[in-house]
Each structure stands twice: as structure tokens, then as C-alpha cells.
Length: 187
Image 1 (tube, rainbow, N blue to C red):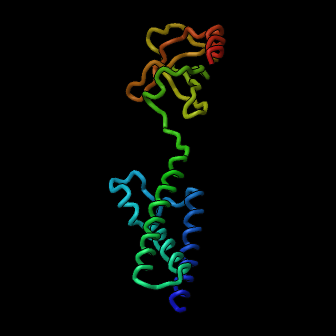
Image 2: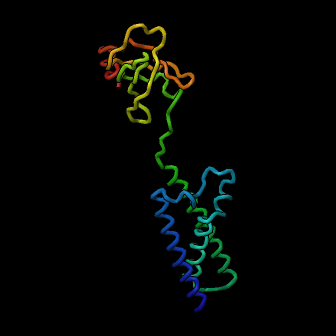
Image 3: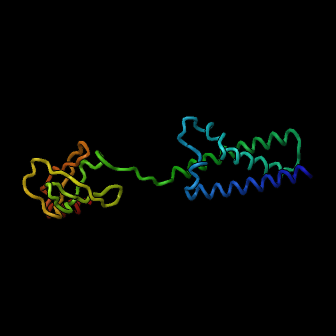
């Protein structure tokens, strides 16, 4: 009877920690205690973490409380159930973490070839353009290619041709009203 009571309260305490930990994982606030799925140690490294210990004790303690038989064989089966919990919950967390929508940061060479719209001309001959970065319109400073001799108008569409030394260069100024319509029709 004493063992049953001990396993019951251990299971309740560990279940409380597990639920709290799980809710933190869903909210993304568990960065200090989360499973590092891409760690060099792989599964073995993650199984022997704080979360792995919680999962093992969760399975072991509930099994021992529910079976209410305390022989060497039941302890062996309890260890097996605890290990199954570690494996199953590891792969569950791995699946949940793979569903996170993390947007890769775009900058530098990632923007070369993108179509941008002239937002304003600067006094030094450069332009501010609006270009889509990570799904949102952002303004960046660009320098016209030396082949562009005419002054570009606000609203003109240009293409980012290169990125060198932290400077974006635009290569085309031939994007008039017809080109805007053609680009919209292609989309």
C-alpha cells in the first residue's frame, strides 16, 4: 500500500511538471529546456535531458501505480514503459517542432533579381526602393548601375542586379506601365 501511494504522488507530481512543460513548448517559451533535435548527439543526447527524465518517470510511475504489483518483473516492465514514453514523446516533439514556421532571413545576395519600385530619389543619386523581403514590403537604398543615365521616376519598376560591398545596384530602368501590367498578368 505504501508503494502504491508513493508511485501515485510521484506520478501526479511528474504529470504536473509534464503538463507545464508541454504548455511551455506549445507557446515556444521553453527554449532553455527544449529538446535540441539537431544536436550532434542525436537521440541519445536528447533522451538523457531534463525532458527525457520527465518522460521516463511519467511512464514508469503511472505504470507502477496502475499495475499495483511490485516484483522484479513489474519493475522491469515499468522501465520498459518509461523508455517507450521517452521514444514516443521524443518523436512527438520532433514532429511538433518540424511544424514551426520559421522564415529564413533574406538579405544581400538573396535580393538579387527581385523587382523593386522606386520610392524616392536621394540627393546623392541613389534611390530608396520598396522590395519584398520575407513576405513584407521593405525599403532599401540602391545605387543605379552606371549604364542608367536617365533619372528614374517615383513608381518606376527596377530590378536589383547585384550586391557588392553592402551596396545594392539596380540594372534596369525599362519597367514602364506596360511592364507592370505584364508582371501582374504573369502572377
